[in-house]
Length: 159
Image (cartoon, rainbow, N blue to C red):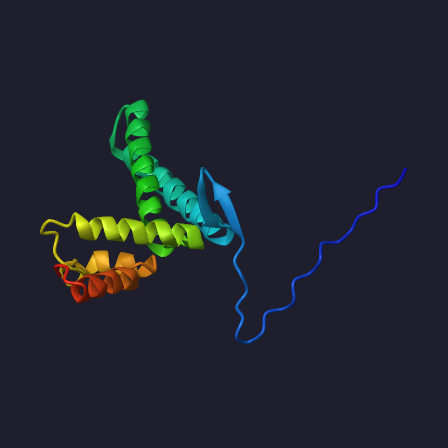
């Protein structure tokens, strides 16, 4: 009995206007780019181990009890893990894409209509903070809210 290996079909090489697509992985229910995850892990290892070893040497130089020095060094290493997480979070922004099919699009429209009907002084899209506007634009929802607000103004609704 022989096992034949078949190579997977190769994707065409990217052209000038087509950049290579990153490989996405699912980790703990979140979708990440494999390369970004690997770089983040390396950052975490380098920062945390470096801080742990440096703090161990530092605390052993002036703390008489070695177990106490190791405990303090461990706390510094844990803090360095948090710092590495923040650095990785700043370097690699989320890459979430929200895909809306036609039925979901209708649901979004229904939600916008309900919000319009029950607004009760919530203001207009122009009153939103810059961060909220940016998030709505990232989700491709900003134009839908502006359009719904314009239609409401045209039909006698409040703006």
